[in-house]
Length: 146
Image (cartoon, rainbow, N blue to C red):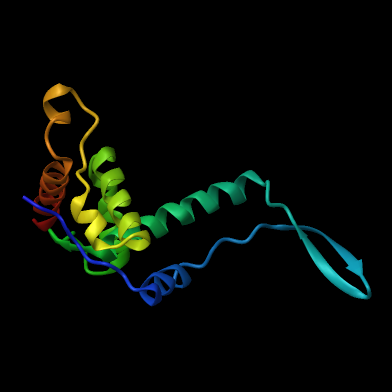
């Protein structure tokens, strides 16, 4: 069993990123320079850092959902499909993330040549994880299809 991913164009990636606005740090004060008032942001605020981490996770999962051709994730919208990725094994999500990152950075040929393996016991670590990723996603699709 295989997982099929497609390359995303730079415009598609930018569109996905811009459709999910980056959180803004809260303004803690203002300063005035040369007659212009500038806000001072608290980029160390724990609530801001948490929202930034959640934003990055959401964007990664949206990119995976957009690049995944087969098997199809359950859900009507891209956000629902990205949310469905919460239910697969962590190592499988890491493998998909690595594959999508490679597609974005080095292209489809490099991804085709890369094997993905789980970090389990000796038996599962010898199996290509792509098959296991596909099986996890298919199980998810079967349980979500009802």
